[in-house]
Image 1 (cartoon, helix red, strand yellow):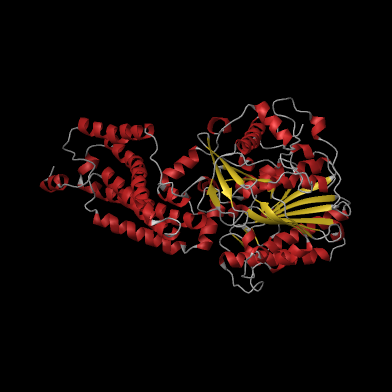
Image 2 (image 1 turned 120 degrees about the vertical axis):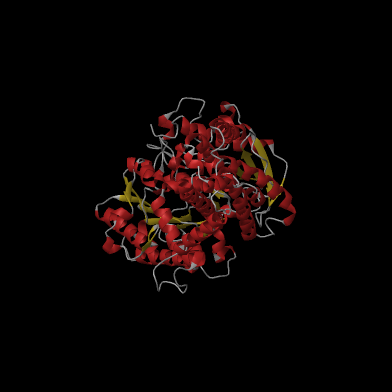
Length: 640
């Protein structure tokens, strides 16, 4: 070894694994402070700083242990001359640069994700990793990606330069045995120890401080690992026979899970609906992306974003106390097609063995309707095509539409006006063929990057969320205006509702106001305008549609027809892990580890105040969620 080499290897530096771990902790702290700044002191008060920073540091150290582990293992794998010989310095510098760049990229990704969802990485982030085309295109169209990557590279390069000469794993003068035991300790023993330790607590002042005290990398791994939750393993339970009896007393007509399924009874005759002047020939169900109730003037908004929907509120059967079951499109689609409470973990739309279910379209297909699912983007996303295609629907998505007809599109798909034109064509085709149509339309325009065709509204594209909402409202108005000119309009029921709200963030785990959505039944020749003020859930829509179309099979659903005066006033809201049941002004929340909480909900503001758990409402919530989860697992949501 030359004198120069000896001087280099004897120079005291942090080993590369230690430097990588330190970078994880430092950048995680930076991310936490940035996200705190985005949240603000009203939602994450300064008084929570000791808990947020202290518990956060513990979670960051967990991440640091696992990030550093591969570098420690390299002590065992790499030859001695790779550790200290000068020609290998460039390789160590490259490794350091890539490590810094990836960690900084993680911080930037968390900033983007928090801006959209006000939470650390969770199931949504895991799902998005599977759909890189749509997600990458959306990011490219929403952010200055080139400048962001240039900035990441520049900062990573600066940190690498400050760390030069590149830190050594260990002096090659040390015997292999010493390196071996360091590698085993840092790369195997320490991570194994961390896995056996309980997770550090979180600053649970409210959901914002709880999320801030987490580490984003740890949250991402946990979300991927716990993508589905076994209800009986994690949540409070009842004997199934007791749950069945309780559901029957609440008017649920499904066959008891504790007894053999009576297929004939579940295909019961349709109940008459006095509210309709005559039965609709066609039904067009439109689920609108992220249409929160508070965007409408009817619910107090003063920005003038929904002129068409506000007019529709006076011309329709307008449901004013309607609530989404979840915070993502798949939850909304699950609820309005299958009529089941949101099972914990992943939505049924994205689960295996979700074909041949007793869905609205499947029942309609068996009884003379032509069911079709229309989506503005690629229905491969979120498994939508497989879900609807496996349950009796025809599929029409972006790939089925000629480019000449797509006058505008972005990362998520066709502009809403193009999608609605396709819906009009589908009804025209059904009418010409003498068929009855059930069309389920899923829009995309009210979504980041918030771009839309020019000269439609007075907010230039991209107009952020306000512009996207106003454009979607314009597209709905244009759609209904074109439909009114069609001969089949007088015999068609249009059902318009949101899949979920634009944001689910709040100061409680399940902020009720963040699940409030509008719904309209519009059919001027079939239905008198009115306001429906009863509390209701998305899961109540499927039995209502089945009843409106004169179909058999309403007993397959957990929901009750919202046109049935005896239907109980209760809603179901969830966020993957917390399962909420709102009834009689009390929100009962089922949580993992068999925990049950309750909150008194203000009838005017939906504000939540902690309250004592009501045993009766607790058991009702358990009966619904436990039975729905078991019914899917045991195949009891399928048609005979």
